[in-house]
Image (cartoon, rainbow, N blue to C red):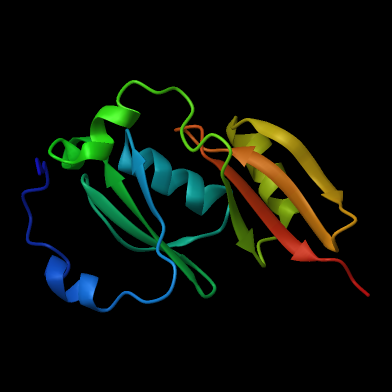
Length: 146
């Protein structure tokens, strides 16, 4: 794994890994800082930790990771994503409890692509579809009132 960060890690990788539970999401991104900015600006996520190589982000009970492409040079997934314009085709990254109207407004103001604006859906959610800098489709949603 090639890293660019020269500072000491926020915590030993094996300590962090042993503490993970449930479903984990790890997104490979071209630029960690740009992806962190998107998640803060549009989704209201808080970075738990972020450097040039890696970030952990949190919104409510949801926590996910970002790894810069260069950290995966020895991983089989690297060849698959290298040079791809839109990543995660067919996947929706749903962030429950994230206001889709606020996310849509923030995305438009910051120049991100909004695939579908906030709308009430028959499955009981209000949601929007927004692309991040790597083409991952984020779907912030909240339940419709009874």
